[in-house]
Image (cartoon, rainbow, N blue to C red; front, side, top):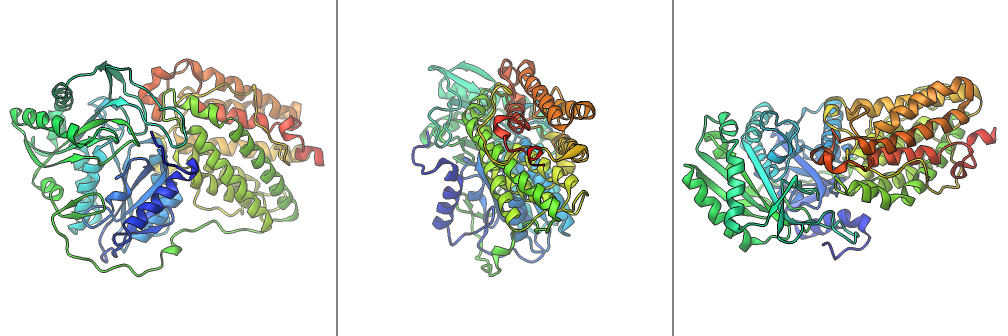
Length: 631
């Protein structure tokens, strides 16, 4: 387990700071991650990779010549935010465009996709490449939904070498995609990992058993088998990967050459890995395969998980040359690379926040009330953080409560700051949305950030009107990322029966029918943004299973009940819908691979939504100073 921590919420930031101090000659810190200490050669394609903390050497340890130009670093097991990715990409780019590489997880797809859109809007040629190597997380005839696990190393290594070799962005993307199509991985776990500050692992494996097909975010495997000998474990890995040999090798001419990574997941150390590798090498030779420059060791870990994984990438001449090319990073070195000129630019300018737009008097007053509502959201999430985390751990990685707390705290603070600067309602929520996305990361960060931004866009910064708010990079659109995401797809807890503690100037109402209608339109815009960028629909076991019934009931009840009563009805509908997700098998998000495990437990994203809207009900104890009561 993770023993040496200070504040668990600061673990990722402190780990990155220590890494930067240890490798000051090789990397530089920027907002959201690290970049090479050397300048990107003019016109060279920049490869920016990234993911959550907890996987070292992935991803910051792979930054250097011959590999990545930069890495965006999220919180533990959570994707970095779009604004962090953009910041790293701006620092890495030098006119050749940027390729964003990441594992195929919902939050990463959302944030890297949003970042690519933002960078293209700024005039940068930005592409994305999602790694899909895990054979346990999808069928052989449809690899698109598969997770990226240890194959991240092999695919992103080849992608980085392609950029270093001077390939243009189109050719480098093609090389990376060919490597991904030729890569297969499978992992085994003997014990789960423990999040910093937690008192128990995310999952346990019974004595004498092993978990097959685990993820790298502390997710359990998809099956349990008796614990074998080292040779039998090697045979299982080789047999299952080679069952897809024909498909994996098809794009490289049916090659009989493979790149190999035997990867330790954190607690299974080198001697054990070498015992397994001895048998893997024997088996591959017996299958007529030649192993090229094998890598044995820890390259993509899962905190202190006991386990290992095998990755094979089938090679043709081009991919082999890229796999064996020189590289010099803190965690991976091969051959020799001549020193490159150090960078001398100002790295403090890569992060851009939404501007503060002064609001009209009425809009400023509404913005202040919304900032109060975000304090109630924060307190509600803090009250139920442990519940949400426990429910998320049933079929996920257990970080939903932590991520929601980080996002809600950041949003509340950003809203207060915007109010102090005279912002109108739209800008207050734009800043809150950007802060939520930035600090929470992961899928929930992207979706709540987009929802707040879209809500604010309807309210605007001018009295009685829409539009004109401060915009920003937290964004209300998901574009190309949307179709894969979902909202966490894990499982949740009971919702609607118990809301968090508040006691601030919270509430959700305005004054009169016109304001109630406008707030209802804002709710619909927020829910539509979640549907659009997340790609989930009711029945997928995600946040939208509670959000859609909430918006539907609010709209239906408003004409006859008035806003406060309509909101109360909608909150009850959201709570009922969240609890009903216990009977649903997850179809999206990280829990998709373990959908059956989540049966009987509701979705945490739906639960957190229901708890929040219940706490914001006008007239409730947690919204006792609602705006309606002030007018």
